[in-house]
Amino acid sequence: MHFALDEQQTLLRDSVARFVAQGGIGAAHWQQFADMGWLGAGLPESAGGYGGSALDVAIIAEQLGRGLVIEPFVEVAVLAAQALLPLQHEPPAAAALAELIEGRSIVAPALQPQGAELSQTRSGLRLSGAQTLVVGGTRADRFVVAATEGGGLSLLLLDAATPGLRRHDYRLIDGSAACDLHFDEMAIDGHQRLGAPGGAGPVIAAAREQAIVAQCAQALGVMDLALSTTRDYLLQRRQFGAAIASFQVLRHRLADMLLAQEQARATLHGALAALSAEDGDARGRAVSIAKVQSGRSGRFVGAQAIQLHGGIGMTDEYLIGHCFKRLMVLDQAQGSAAAHLATLAGRSTP
Image 1: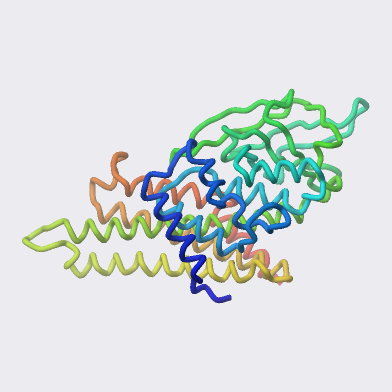
Image 2: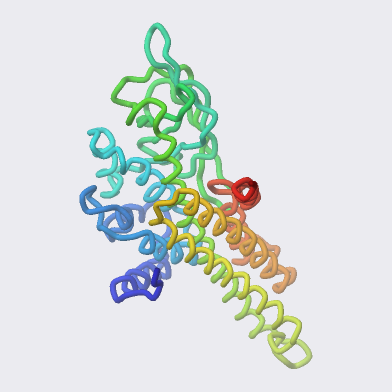
């Protein structure tokens, strides 16, 4: 795959960068995300999207990462949207997808493979259990929920006001909003279940792959911000009559940070290329490799940035600490680097 940006992709990158630079962060700007086409960027025109590719989504995600934007772009516009996309022939999914793209509603994904269970009782289908760490769920109008059923996973589309659904809101360390969902033997109507019972596993897996790649692009943007901020600090800070950027040991550490970032970029490009592969095992391997390297590089770049800043890097008021916190949250999203490394080890076992 060729990753040199064409004219349209360059314009897209620059428009997102300008928006972020002008302070386009926060709930009041979500509709602008839709108006500029970002929420449908990676969806086909047949679904009401703009026919873009995973690379277009990565371009947007990287710039949002560089601006430390904590709006749930990837969770809603990638993970939830990609989960609904294969089921758009069903009216509830089609309506939810259209409202998501247009910014008229937020559909948050609750797609952990374990925690919620759908069972058949004498009085009908009942949903019990919980879904945790639902990013974007605090403002969601709907949830697309995974629940175990008959040895597989089923997808449910639930309104936030559905009786029996309880929500506990909280903030993550980077300031982003998340919630836990609790299902108290909820009565489920047939139209709330999407697709075949127990048959949603492959749909969820494919959606997660798309989301992981987009989150790796976000992390790359955060790393770029941490690196450029640290470089500028070293150029401005002076000791013994010279900028500390002239000290060889600090220049070497800055070079190590750049190398780590470029390693993350290389594996991201590999995952983007693999998303179109027919071989599901090869695709999953490339995505996990990108996730592992993104986590490792992000932790290294963030920690080095704090150390090179000295005491100021530890303060909540300074930018670098927020970069590190954001990278740690992105590392844990959709499975940590350690979890994906274990998955890779399993794939390599004869």
